[in-house]
Image (cartoon, rainbow, N blue to C red):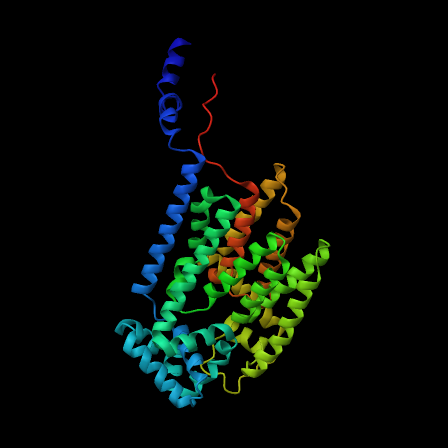
Length: 400
């Protein structure tokens, strides 16, 4: 018995409890861990911002969004095509430009045929606020530079919004957890390419935080801003309306916001000659078309199911969002199971976020992590705010 106790006393765990923890306790206080979380997260954001400026990726979407911004100047399809690809060639590394123009049949065809390239632009024109921002910034610093700086700036703004939320909620100790979720859901890649995703995410996260604090009008205005950047965010306005009804919350702001979005959606899609939901669904989820000139496929339930099945398969094979979403849902269940029920506002917001994730996938089953990143990060922040994790060593180990 004495020998066993002696061995136990010499174990690493016993040594840490007896010698290590007293040494670490002054360092691992709540305040110091919060400062450490703040510094680490801020450094994480700064490093990614610098990388996005220094080493941007010149993807095909950058060309399309630049063309959409130039289109506002009234250029013809031929001039639009020539000017866009001249800019890309002048700025993109040779290897990336070769991939953009000859990486596959689609890239080759749209590079060689101005009409085919121009036919794709209505899919991008509908991101109205992003295209307008790119247009006006491009007039000041150049279209390519505008695309690079806008991506990097919105990457930083989204990260700072998350940091601001954590600071207000006093959960800075959880900053490394949030950073991991962001990276796993594509945050690093999103800031490195030219898309409106992180501009949307900034408006969206601010709207969610305002909703959580009971600032419904501010929340709806911000979410409406996200809708103007990417019209599919009308779905979140709809789910907020549903949860307002379900949880008997203030209805008028969300109702007005949703109806205003419906009216604007009709105007934006018709004004940009968008080919419609099914043609876009077919193009993105069934089979890419080299041109959308005259493309008007007939709706097919079988092809719709095929598109959803493909989205599920590719999501599981190549992306992380389904797994992270499942883990966040598990975290919600564990909190409730252990008596940490989320407040009414938090429950309503979580419900709206879950419905939006499911709805987005059902309506348009894109498998990319970046499609769901802001929704999953918002869920994680709501749950972390309820949990309020504390990793400090504030008490001495109990005596045996």
